[in-house]
Amino acid sequence: MLVDSHCHLDGPAFDADRDAVIERARRAGVSFMLAIGTGDGPPDLEAAVRIAERHADIGATVGVHPHDAAKFDEPTAERLDALCHHPEVLAVGEIGLDHHYRNSPTGEQRQAFVRQMEIATAHGKPIAIHTRDAWDETLDLLEQHWAGNGIGGIMHCFTGTSEHALRCLQMGFLLSFSGVLTFPRSGDLRATARWVPSDRLLVETDAPYLTPTPHRKIRRNEPRFVVETARTLARVRNTTLEDIAQQTTENFRTLLGGFETGRAS
Image 1 (cartoon, rainbow, N blue to C red):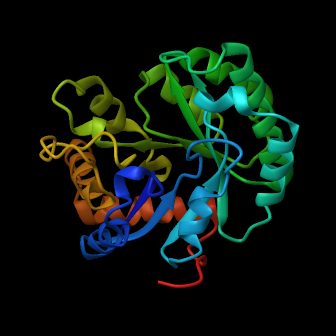
Image 2: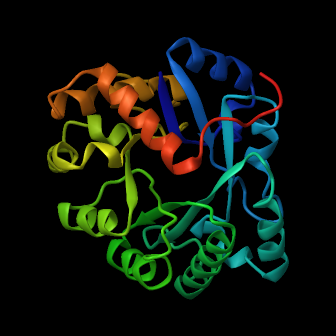
């Protein structure tokens, strides 16, 4: 039993066969999937909620991705605040900074990030963090506006250095490893994954992106492939796939309060 702690099931890549993708994940041993609800950004914040309402083994997040930070305004903040009461919403995310694409101005990214941390804090919701080419600034803002509240969160698709990992761990974050861990050139990342405390580990797909080895020729990633990342994590930590599955599932449950969500399956 594995948890895919980060997947974009609402995206157009799955429009033709979304239910089949979900069923394949179940058959592969994925017991739960966290659907990330950033979608196409405001005004629609409920992309993942609509999926989670239909499946007992899928939970949702809500949030505005840094790419869409320019769309973030007070009505968006109010709607996000209201959605945090929804029983399917387990976390706020993915939120953070992206200085690689800079689809939104840096200042607006910071403002949206901080405001969403405030909303998550008010509701006691963990946060799922996106950071690209902005590690130090992201961690600085987390240390200023998040650390110490005791809520915790997920560093989605962790690809930082060992120093970044230490800063995340000191703030109570779980490190979620994606298919990047399986890539041939990810030796430094695997070295970091080797020493991260077992109770701070998660695995994810970020589907439909970042298809893991040995499925790289398949352009669309799916939640069922999370097993490949878990298998690699087990190998670098000199343990079993079963142990990784059990530990990461328990870590997810501890942070997000269990799997008692959904209306149908």
